[in-house]
Image: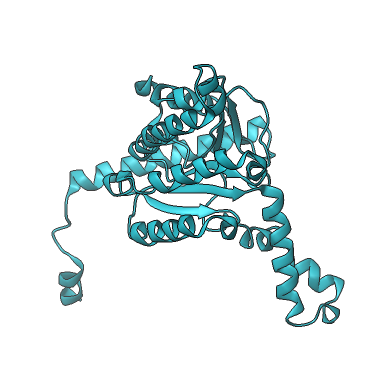
Length: 286
């Protein structure tokens, strides 16, 4: 299935809701934590393959705000898995940079330290960026962004701003610059495993124009072939961003013509080779 992919149209940012670990384990007569352990192995497979495909950002919904309501034993097991997975050599093997989004201050100190250490250790890596959403919720994120914007405005005094000032100061870009995800583009493709058909408070602002893909496969069983299938589904879609179908087709035709022109120019340059009189020689002639 991989050979069916258009490598020029690989999503630059893939976000994944990794669902189904607990149900996968229970179906096998095991505890839910067994499923989470198996899910870590899937993370390794999918991270490595996304890096090989040329994906620029991979965001994984690892632990939501709502997950704090789970049994203490399961939360402790999940935190232990976070620690063990961050010791993985996949970051260096695949030149992957690590980042985290979420209310990290709520996490155990040991986990916070390991997160910061991994961020620093991988900071110079220039390949794909893996972003882990830990203690994350989109409503929390947007509420925090509003509070931060208000605090910025209060430095001058809110009463000093006219309505016109606020219209200019508080824009979509202003909001984006205060979100946890401000360092990366919005997702092109959101994948949810496990059969549920909802986004569960994940990147609500950022997925306004994201292509959504849902599958029944539980996360521990999700492998490269499943990833290819999701990307193929994405590549068959036409992303309009509010435009009409004919407008998009015209834009695509313009891109094709520009690419063809560039190819023709490059071929012509290669055929002609270097001009017998370079710029320095031309200056001397003048």
